[in-house]
Image 1: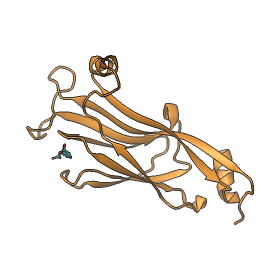
Image 2: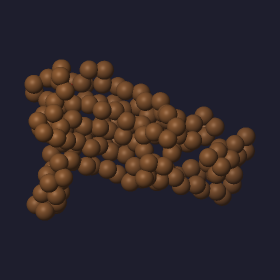
Image 3: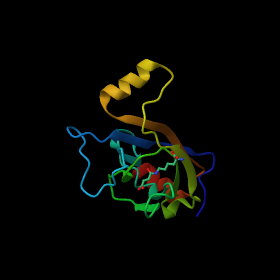
Length: 161
Ligand code: SLL
């Protein structure tokens, strides 16, 4: 196929983690979760406002800390659904997020890095307090995926999908 010269297409997406401390009332620890685990958390890649991104993103590999059983997780696309992994644990670490694009794109996979946050963080006490009040620690990054001079078949997918 040919590339569409001079054409740049941007698609917004969000990736990151949401964590919650275990707590008998609002987030009880499920049976079988080890005693030393203090939080449940999710790592994800999704469209902004949950818009579908599976027409350009085919699968996502999440590489978690080696202390976690089966720490390399490949998540295939399901139309309209986020790419995500739910886990429990006690510590923060860096997650490697590898994006695999749909085959029409001809694009090589791209790697992102995300630091899992379990504890409230921020520049000010007010920022930390707001996270504590909400009961969730949200660490999300808004990104734009750039497709530079896409192949014409992929251009079709991007603009009609
Ligand atoms: C730390 N550098 O020392 C980090 C490592 C590892 C976190 C954190 C284990 C989960 C499981 C878990 O939470 N590991 O056993 O499934 O803080």
